[in-house]
Length: 305
Image (cartoon, rainbow, N blue to C red; front, side, top):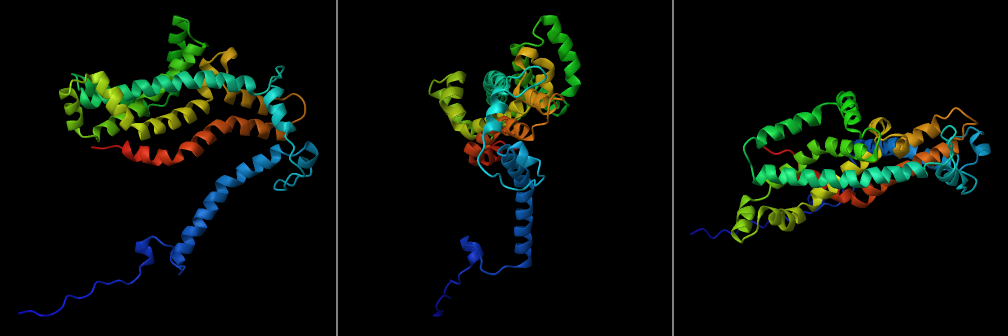
């Protein structure tokens, strides 16, 4: 009869396994910290320079000390950038472009996400004949540079009378956003158990009710990812806005380019930096408030077999 007592488990404290920071600094860990610090400085330093420059007067800027802190908090450049910065002979600031960008962004984002979510849902749970061919066409379109489509779209939109109009630029952003968003939603819905869809149908829900009351609430992380992608992509767009929006609907990025590259008068670098920061506020706010959902949603909608 074996009377040996079982050996006691190893209860040695392992800081790595417990998730606590180890006290010993190894060369590898020092290298990782150095890399992270250098990378952070690479991205933070330009932002720091832009902010402090926008708060300086032109007299302070002319001293040439790029990294010097402003002598005081002077928001005159921000007010001028918003209200009266000149783009050639037009001195209405970036507020006009801001409103135009909002008018383009909101309907484009809602339409593209709604269509992509429905398309991804249908391609997953309701595969009609030829649906995979449609999905393949969407994927091919996602990897073709959009510059290839500019001239044909200009001709088509001119013929149907929507070139240079607000509906025209909204359609452009909606169509160009569909391939990638459809891929993300399709892969997310494909990761859900098919029994959930079948059980809902057994309970009497039709395909629209299953989508609206069951699938869409479960897709919250993907909806956040889609909003981030569309908001940043549409808000930061320059080429499509400059070509298709028309003079009355030029987005904020085009206004910013006209302000910074204006050849009339003295170069006001503080105003240019303030206008740039105002233009970047919306994407920064979106990333700041929904960043924790972004990684979760990307992982949920990653490419699956």
